[in-house]
Amino acid sequence: QVQLVESGGGLVQAGGSLRLSCAASGNIVSVNTMGWYRQAPGNLRELVALITSGGSANYADSVKGRFTISRDNAKNTVYLQMNSLKPEDTAVYYCNADVVVGTPNTLDAWGQGTLVTVSS
Image 1 (cartoon, helix red, strand yellow):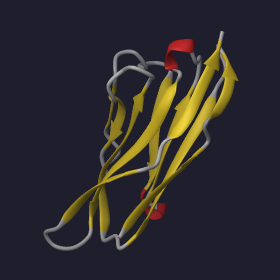
Image 2 (image 1 turned 90 degrees about the vertical axis):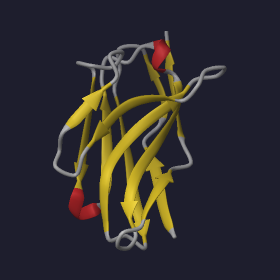
Image 3 (image 1 turned 180 degrees about the vertical axis):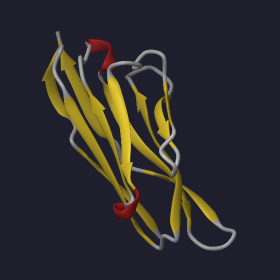
Image 4 (image 1 turned 90 degrees about the horizontal axis):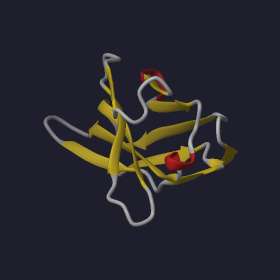
């Protein structure tokens, strides 16, 4: 069993900042790529940012220059620093991780989601 627990969502005014955290726990050997996705009402879930175990990051064009993804491998935790937030960033944000639970078994794990609301 692997659990991803997110925290840090909430209500913020446009132009403000929030920091999301996601900690993986359970039967973990190691964690490969970790990432953040989001889903706004009526929309499909979309990729926000990914980070490899080596620290290489990729971002959706819509968040480049405003969001920063980082991770602490010792804690199996990934973070998303969100600055200059816009109303269109309003969504439920989900953490995702490619977790090695054995050799060669991996698990595509998801968190329960945390709501980010940006008011105009």
